[in-house]
Length: 369
Image (tube, rainbow, N blue to C red; front, side):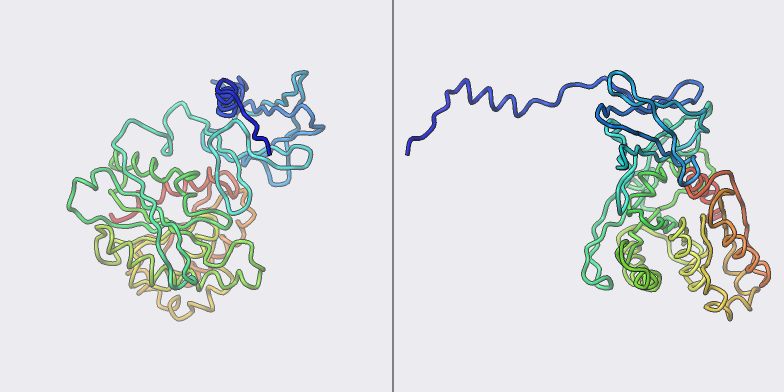
């Protein structure tokens, strides 16, 4: 059999052509104007219909985009309030992240792009020239969750590596469909804490962010009901002991807080309220205690004096346009009925990261005072 021979110049040519990056594309998306109007663009010359969805829009709505002669679809919206938002395009029925925006929000299913709209004055979640903490990704083997190896993200405050001090800890839980990294990636927890600490509005603290899906996200509904008890076991038996042995976390319930959004808010209300000996603060963002809360904790609720002595910070917050607003209000009313001291606040917005960034910015300064 004859062997094909390629000359050295041809081999080099083939190698160079393979190594070449794709042609440069001057397209810009998203483009934020000084007036806070935002222009989105996507190149889809063969598409027949393209729309935009962004997290400031009501669920189920869309913004039609206009196709130019160059095959680029464009839409300008706004002005948009300063904050961070998720958005995506739907191209002929297929939803995709912005292909030229490298800032992507990871999720259990699909992904979306992240847009930052700056304000005239810096927002708590914006990057500022202040001392910055560090973020560590850890991998923890779990015996509770069938031998899985799961990631846990940890924020360490500025100066942690040069100090021997022990710090209070906030266990911060994400929502359904999110990943362990979501509170960093979309919530900007590290920048919020950096700024609050620099402004002396919050105490330096460690923040531990585990994966909250003890049952796979896409499991049937009857299996999802097992997520809370399995996560609670995983959290109490593995996450807390691991974190408090690896990091310099101060001892005592007065140095522990637990908070979360949506699914993580339900986990926080149940784990925190069910273990008042372990936690001195609970934060519930866009969530409630769940339909079984009163029945599950009836004896504890009945002793409001003991609860109030142990739980100086019980903070519940909800977006005014959130579909779960009524459930949160019912939870607030339930606690009122039993005389459990807490704060209930509402802000503009729905079930979105712009609300949860605000929640963390408001909640963190109340801790460990």
